[in-house]
Length: 82
View 1 (cartoon, rainbow, N blue to C red):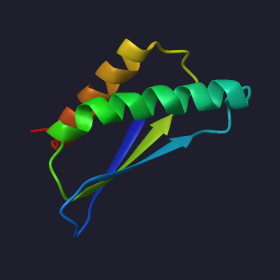
View 2 (view 1 turned 90 degrees about the horizontal axis):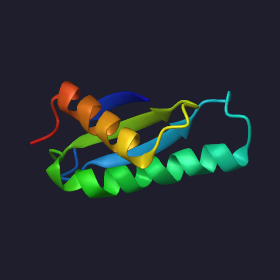
View 3 (view 1 turned 30 degrees about the horizontal axis):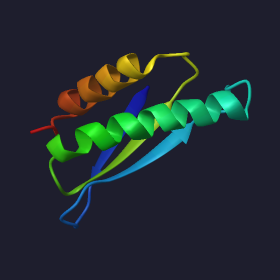
């Protein structure tokens, strides 16, 4: 999982989920996006407003707990988690 962050002029933080082409099929790609979206939904209240966040998903076959902890780690590393 990768993360790109940019400031925006809004009073909210927006997120986009992007998958790389190396996923073996639509089922795996969509499953990865669903897990990441749910992890974001549970974490987004802790994220500072005013950012655009791009979450890049790689084929890792990660569980939801791994995706959630990875996302939180990357957001904390980027310095946008309160």
